[in-house]
Length: 514
Image (cartoon, rainbow, N blue to C red; front, side, top):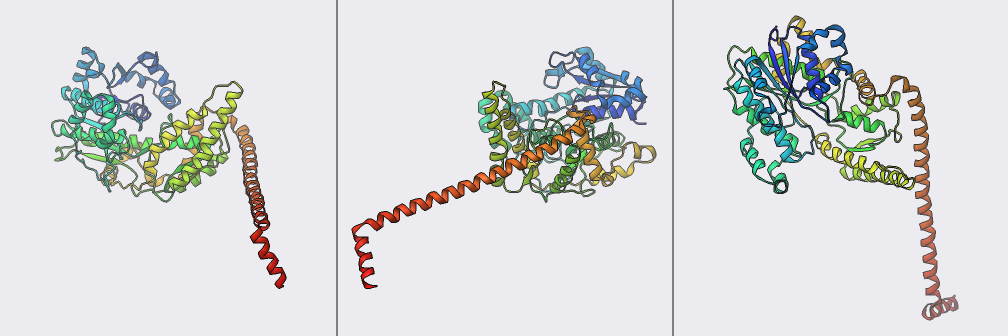
């Protein structure tokens, strides 16, 4: 009922979470007046072409089939958070100022390896530009900033509150504006410390910036943990990108990723995308309808907490079994990778299982005049793993008491429509949906190709075992050959000593005594 008749502004609507948010609002809140989104032309495609392409996605099927009129409520504006005034025309900006009452800001760069200047420009300065627009909105009820649960890596237990940044976000914005990139790259490690990457650091700064607008604006922050494929909505297993665990899932299932540095006993902080989106919508409603403004800015950790814990090792164990039942097509090798708690052991496996095969394959491709690609692929994988492994080798602790309390406030149809039943997720069926979803929606593999993929898996298993056996036989032969060589060297040394005059006389004296 809160969203009925309202106009919303959503940034980041073309991203993974943004599209699920858009679909959920249009489907579950049919009385919404309109939703404005910022979207920029990309790769030669106009805004209109990108919107048409987006609506052809399977995730919008139920909306097209059951509520086709809802799509007309979407109003796209050509805009970009990287541009001054968001790249909006005066007419577009005035319309937003006059009609919008809810702003959900989710636009962000998720590239963990981005340079500091790029991350600050998108995640911090972009947030500043949206906040400045929100200041001009005449009837603003709530501004929701979508952050991340990993934006304060130095906090042992993350509570649902704001943590002040050691360096002012405005100072960082000025620094990135006046410094050249080379100088900035030199000082980046010291500035970001203890953050492992520019993504978490820029998100931390953005939270501090949002807090500066409280209480003048009705702002709040939501912090989802690692977002995974959908449990139910818009489709079971829905995913459209290779970020985070999904990239590991696909890379491991195709035999490209054979080793990863990870603490198997540590708990994985994951949240399905539909639960995260439901959390964002419910938090939006709660903050907008508060009778009395809170003394501190509302913050909600969208995490499972202690409601449904599972370790990385258990995820691998279950996922591997399901991946063998539903293998991917076009696998490079038999998917038999593993996680290693020792960085040294992982690096050894990476050399023998990642890099040497990559150089071998590219060498063969070069000989046969084909385009080489494996070294480039492994370089990207190594970069991604290095960044992601920071999160899989540490135990994280998030409090989500406010979120759980908010969940209990939902009644009747809302409780079912915007459910977040973390404890009800059964890991085996969910992992199956994740693998089939990645296979179908992300890799575009037809379910009808499964029988052939299973035959390929068996052949890959036979090839893997044959190569492994030959490798060990080669090692054994090397050891035996080395032993024979050493024996020959020792015999030669003994022959030399025995032919020496002193050694010969000593032997003769010994023989005469005997």
